[in-house]
Amino acid sequence: MNNQSKVRDILILSVLLIFSIIALLALESDLFTIRPSSHFYQLDSGWSVQYGEKKYENVTLVDFDITDSVKGDTVSFTRTIPPTELKSPAIMFKSRFCVVDVYKDGELIYSYGRSGYERGTYIEKKYNMVSLGECSTEHELTITFLITEDHEVKNFFPVRFGTTKELITYFFQNSRLSMFVGGFFYIYAFVLSALGLYMLFCGKFFPSVFLSAMLSLLLGTYTFTYNDILFFVSDKERLFSDLEYLSLYLLPLAVLILLHSTHPNIAKNIQKVLAIVNVSFPVIFSICHYSGLINFTHFVTFFQIILAVENVIFLPSLIEGLGKEYKRHKESDVYIGFSADNYLVLGYILLQVFLFLEIVKFNFTRNNTDIGSNFYSRIHLLDFGLLDFMICLFVYYFLSSIEQMNASRVKEELEGLAFTDALTGLMNRAKCTQYSYAINKPYAVVILDLDRLKKVNDAYGHLEGDKMIKAFAVLLKKAFADADLIGRTGGDEFMVIYEKPKEGVCQTCIDYLQLLVDEYNENEGKNEMFSVSFSAGHAYSNEIEEDDFKFAYYLADSRMYKMKETHHA
Image: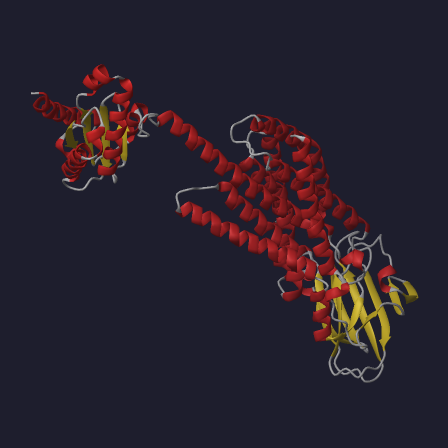
């Protein structure tokens, strides 16, 4: 790639990615945030905590650390709620791997997860929305967490207080980025599916379009589940939890299938190994999960390690293979000054970079990251990686389409040079032969011979003979304008083919050609050293028993020679 192309690609990519990041950061900033009323606040500090036999006073909720927690541990948080004028106050908080009970003045007013825990199923994350009822006076609030997984609960999420409407508004306005990215993926999947179906109905099947749609659907599902949106709007926590982990574990396989559909010959052996690995592990994880042995959540760290190893193995081979393809492509006749593969590689690299950053962030803020805590905590870095990957994938498809159109144009030009008669612009003998091999009944063939061409060549020279051929070719194209093929098969020989011909079309067009020839001889031909004359014969495929085109050709040719004999008599 020359320096100018490199600079152009870098500028395009930089503008594209910077614009997307700025747009997403602006979307997530306070610019579009509705400020809550003075009654809305976070119940952060002032909690009294009972953890086993230990009791702690004046605790800040999100700073309370229980790294060594095990299944069966119980943690209770208690504090007073000051009087409020709100008619229907509520609290909202997130929980993971915990059975939750909420008490107001010692009376149980809310419970989540206990029946599932007693059945032995795992308890995943939940946005708990608890109505407190009348709070015109001071009340004691107690939230009890029963931990259901060993070493999974390290911290607790903040508790927010306000009206139900304010709490719902707060969640959605702090989830704008995730909803935008997830919605983009779903819309993109729909558009790609519609495009793929349209091309399929047009007789062109592009597997990569459907694979991209499936990948986009998978990314949208993971975005909406990982960022708690589906959990917040529904009580199907188990379903959406399973979808979150299934979509996560299937993402490497989906990306690999997409890359294989676009570049099947790059690092072929590595692709096969990774395909086996990326199929095997989701299957194993699912068997362990649904059989009750080990749930999905315990495979996350192992999955992250496998993913890192795969990238170390595959990414250098991918870049090397694409580099070789680029060199071959640059030397081809269809190169148009840039390579779509650059954008595909960039998107894949960006996805891996942001995925790595999200993994680091996840492991450092694993259990107390919550929407709205601060700007850093509510920015999901993986959202940027996923969106950048899909943008680069979109650019890749756009540029690939341009390359394919250019390749088709070059192919048509080359075929035109190979199959076009240079003198007349009609199809040449090679094209006529190729066409005749592929044709199926019903069809009709017309064989024509330009009379006295040799005499004109001998008497006036080949320039006059060529002039006579070109004049006849113009009249031939006009008379047989609706034919499927018009060709010149020799010096003075021509062929016309109709597929699914109408009855009598051959003789009608031959008569019309004779009329045009007569008009030419009476007008333009007066000033020429020759007059145009021709012999013709035709045959329909239903006149022969054999399926071979040559028998119809011989029949038409014999009829043409009978006419030629009368012209030379």
